[in-house]
Length: 295
Image (tube, rainbow, N blue to C red; front, top):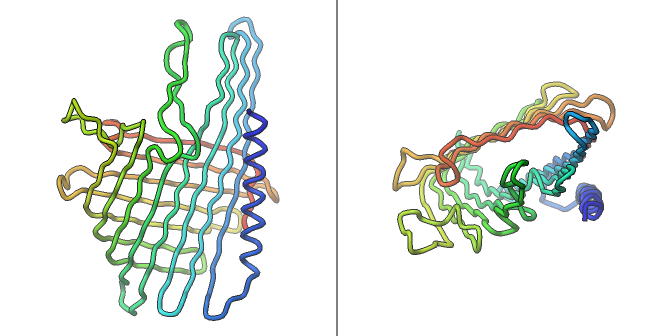
């Protein structure tokens, strides 16, 4: 299983690179294409055999693929963004062995913009976010035994969102910045893992679908600090009309520094806040040294 997952990661990254390389050399009249694609692959391994800690091994592999395309077709501009992050972690001790996914998420979004030569332009957006494979949480303690608790899987749950409003976009020699604000509809669907859809007020009913309408505010930035360092960030907020005092917040940050040719350092700091998921602020931080490649 572990070797199969590792091979799949390599095949997926290679296929995506080949596909994007072919798309970049295509020429189509009346269509201007701007592509940016970045890939990353990192490894982390440790092994211990010590009388104080016993015997244990850890092996973690993470892969990422970020793809952005900006197309101009006649009077319209279409921006397509997709993010793919998947990792596998193997934990082996004297009493147990676990293989669990990490950084398990895929996100895709399309933004249709109508340039009207104002300071801001009308837009329509649609996005989807879900897991790539099953997610697990280690439950229990080393003293009394540990088990894997399933928490999510592909399309369960899945979050889709549509928005309409006004956006501002600025592109310069060092990167781009965009911000948009508008009215948004959000739908969350689940089959088994209903933590995001179930209404705790209805104790006798388990809801598999949740829909909200509200206001969305999204900022995106992709900045090249110098020839070897890039910074990407997205800050998205969503507040429902039912209660504008409660907001869903996602703040994603990624620094990439190229050390030598295809070797680089990636620092990711992601912060989430959604009371439907947890009353506490959630975060994910990672610092990895691995393979980086941009097309």
